[in-house]
Amino acid sequence: MLRTLLALPRTVWLLGLVSFFNDAASELVYPLVPIYLASVLMAGPKALGLIEGLAEATGSLLKLFAGVMSDRLGSTKRWVVGGYTIAAIARPLLAFTSIWPMVLALRFADRIGKGLRTAPRDALLALTVDEGNRGMAFGVHRMMDNAGAVVGPLLAAWLLAEQMPLKEVFLWSALGGVLAVSLALWVKEPNRNLELPVQHFSWRVTALPLAFKRYLLVLALFTLGNASNMFLLLRAKDLGLPEYQIPLLWALTSLIAAVFSTPLSALSDKVGRIRLIVGGWSVYGVFYLLLGFNSQPLLLWPLFAFYGLFMAATEGAEKALVADIVPREVLGTAYGWFNLTAGIMLLPASIIFGWLWQITNPLTAFGLATCCALLAALLLRGWVMRRS
Image 1 (tube, rainbow, N blue to C red):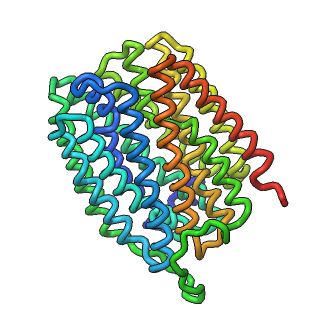
Image 2 (cartoon, rainbow, N blue to C red; image 1 turned 90 degrees about the vertical axis):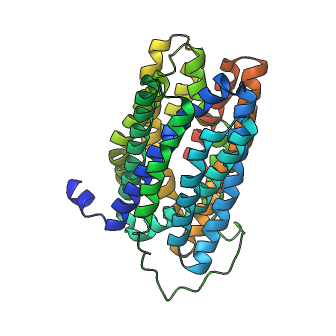
């Protein structure tokens, strides 16, 4: 495995470094947004659900557009660089917000950047490696991404421990953004099969394989119960965890995900993507159920570490499965639909989750997430790849 890992193309490692610095900047800000909304701007779970749902859903529309256009133009790099640039500009501007709609606007801009880069970047990764190493390549990328998600919260916790105001902490995200964009400029376009016909602009999913369309439906069901991770951090705050420890809690989750992303994603090359994803979604369902029942701050640490295993088992395998099902000449379009589905469902997921939390109790919201995850796991196992 080590020899194969070291033999991965330079582009895989370079994109990993880009994601490392970008996620370090993003996760410096991410765990502080619910704290900032609740303690500074006095906004509750409903506002948080609206902000995250609208930002993610709208950004996801651009994931499909960018994926289709990357196939049409035969280019992925320009979308990757542009997307990282927009996010790098938007994040530090949170320091100048005074009302929650301004936070919504900047989160919206940040997600636009993600929308432009995600599908072309995933297609670029898939085109760079052979089929037998797709899981490992996506696992390495997720490992680097999650490693950045460790550094960001740790830096946030240190700055908060030094009594730095939240608004000044947001400004530090500019450094990681600049480094990410600078490295993205060094990425090279993958070699494409010039004998393949140029793809015409098309939003249609009908021409894609039946198994892929089924996969999208099951993914939509799972994501309906997969509201913004900010609700997990809000739950930790409500259970009494000190504010400076909340970034550390998220850093633990990202550390577990970083450590296990590569071996678990590479395992999907051996045992099959679906088996690993079903296991990861089942872990997710159990985690949400336990977090809904939990009332002890001390138990948050093992629970969030458990959540990191879900991330490690699914993030790379879910994307590698797309490349297994769909022809390579339409990979950008397929990843656009994949990311659109996962992102657009965050709007109802986050709104419903925040609404249930605020008008009933957290357990109801977490229970719904558990039901969606377990049902999706059953359908993925027994229906998606079944012959018509």
